[in-house]
Length: 317
Picture 1 (tube, one colour):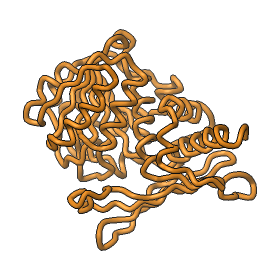
Picture 2 (cartoon, one colour):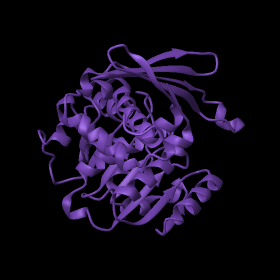
Picture 3 (cartoon, helix red, strand yellow):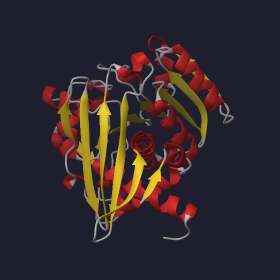
Picture 4 (tube, helix red, strand yellow):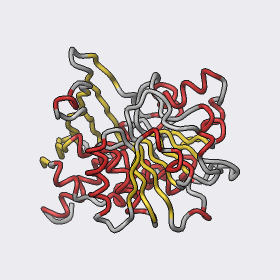
């Protein structure tokens, strides 16, 4: 059994995680069959249990979600991932759960952008990121790693964290601009890729501002009562989800427009269908990817982390 720290996870290139997810979706994996996330309310927040199985690997991620933690300088989410392998289901690895989440969520978004970005928009791109936390950083780094980005625009309320992230990203050599949420209209209107990585309970911007050729990623919540995207954008966009079942359970960005009659279940595209080419997206409007995080993603990326770790430390598997 291997204990894989957060530092070791951070050494895994995000492109490797993206490629592993694509291979899984092009093979036998069907996200619609993935077990749902279980939640247990606690005195301080909730516990999340996320199991999945694929081929010779199975795994489960255990997380605590404590809303009051950030006020005390502590992580909002803490946890671990246990990977089981082989017919005897031996414990192959225990992986830092937060580091895994911080890799796999941007990797899923990057996979979506890889397939949603119009070919004519694949040159020098402007990236706007809403948020200042680990997911904002991870998404910015993933997009910089996989695309030719000419400028990053960070939008966040916490000016200290926003400015620290701006300094970090500026180290890549890409120009970085910053603004608060109330001054974000230009950041939205000029963007080719918009990543929403916040805990906002209501839409972050006016959906009419988004360019017709832009891709929007919304991953900030996994609650049917929270949303980062307004009805206008959902109505304008081709909407892609990790799975329809998951989106209908947990994605406020989808659940609320559905309840309002803005979009129908039949209008949702599954990411797997887009990746495999069995679904073709319209070309006359923005494209929106809504992610909530699913167990199969942890399993696929966790297995990739394990393979990479063993190859680096013990030789070939």
